[in-house]
Image: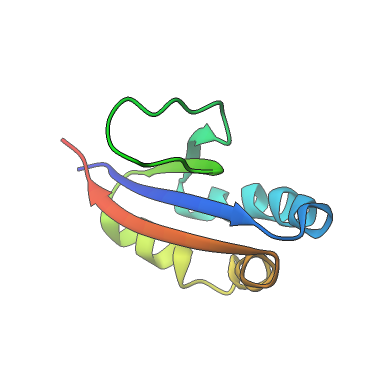
Length: 95
């Protein structure tokens, strides 16, 4: 069953965050992850949600998604994201 990582990002250092955006795609291949949404325009339809940036990643299953997130392959990019932005991240299984 496919799994999705959904991320809301509030960027504090846009210059260094660009380096994060370059590192992340390289880390996905081994885990068969791909971007579905990567910072496209958002429009709030209900509620008070006004995110700065939304990212959605798709993986073949939750195990691969969690393996990517906790991997040494993603660790340098994750550390950079933690330094340059505030994030909320969830894992959700699809159909």
